[in-house]
Length: 231
Ligand SMILES: C[S@@+](CC[C@H](N)C(=O)[O-])C[C@H]1O[C@@H](n2cnc3c(N)ncnc32)[C@H](O)[C@@H]1O
Image (tube, rainbow, N blue to C red; front, side, top):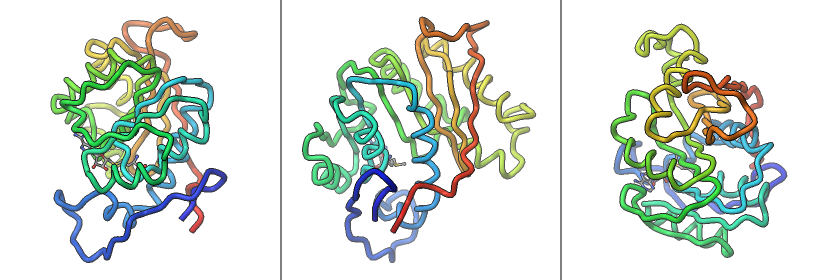
């Protein structure tokens, strides 16, 4: 399998007989959700178009699809790749021999200061903020730009905006920004939405965009492409 215009990525063998559940490692889930992964990668490409990080942590590295995008876009950046799943770490080592690969729990990992921290959460929304608050504080303190995936779009598609007491996705991200600013000291700058989720980019206030009341004028991109994959 390859990502269009990027490089070949090895996916470890999986017999796909296990049911999807909490105990199923990421690389087995991946094959069942490959279209969404393609859309997510398109989304990731959108939010990194105008940044130039010299050092990057991909904290939830998985099999390395996002790492491939980051590595291709910023070939000179120092790249740290991590995953809690040892199978994923092994695959990351194979796919990215020049990267620094770790097998840590992000909750306890004392990771270094870098320009960009990217956390591709399995399932993060405003409702799960309390579970990840400490991680977001740490990642906010140790990065200039913090990016993560947010799965609220899945709820939006199901008409669940009311669960957040908002009427549009943009209002949801304004609400999220209001919750995140006090803990990360970063503003949401850009949200790139794709089918079931979104990629959110947050930055410090000393950037080019004017902020008001802890909220930046958030830019929202919709990803309409079917994805970046060729098989
Ligand atoms: C959505 S996947 C990441 C996909 C990845 N971006 C890719 O391109 O393949 C989330 C990954 O986070 C890992 N993970 C979950 N909890 C973690 C934790 N506490 N610390 C580090 N990695 C974790 C999972 O093992 C899984 O591989």
